Length: 353
Image (tube, rainbow, N blue to C red; front, side, top):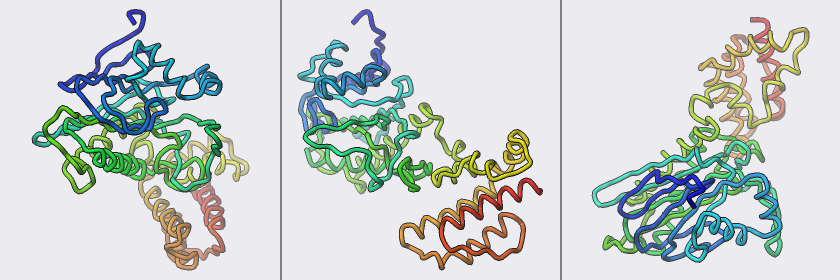
């Protein structure tokens, strides 16, 4: 292993976190139990020595296709100098340089989470149209992943590991919802990516036995806050995703397939550069962003059945008139009509302003 880059990036009494080659390795110093969404040594396991988060690229995809995920992971563990019998792990296309670590403590409890995250290419809401069908272990995944590994210093019962997984997953989803990160498969807000991975590890050597890691428990609170903080950091490091990044008109409209070119292509007698200059101010105007967000919220409520289209026609008209400083009547017979009108109104407003 001396030929490979290897550095300890975090350490405490229970584990080391090591960055080695294209992987991050959790090296356990104590007896442990865990639940992991791996292929190799998957599900509930005890006394795994190493938990790996590895980045794949290039020929790795061909190796997975020909050898399968389990054999691929076994070979990679050997490549890292680890024993496949006592190792397990997650896979991602995210760069391991863009990891984020968050530790939260309360009295005797300590929770540490390390996350790598990329959701700009594979974001999806649970229930969106699927991207593959598996039959007899035959399928192919497009790896674009949020991988979460959470370590707790107490001794979790197997049921507590499950409630911890639930808590951590909901914490991740809350970050995506807060950032309004779009699904790539629908007009919904993403709840994750299609290939997210997760692992929760507890210290079986601890005398502090815990049977609940749900959201009402202090341990659940620490897990959630640790996952949220690390996920936010990792998303920013991998894709620059942040509240500031999302604070534009186009960031609100892109999940409805409205982009700069969508707007520009509906114009006439104006150059692309001139249009971009005019659009910049509108795109970054906080009041315009707020008003369009209100309009989109009404549309979302229609799409999930909380409101009918007729219920939002008057408030949508009021929003349009406030947004574009005019008094007009609008006819909306569908959601598509609202977006068509929005595109034409934006162009009319910024060009004639």
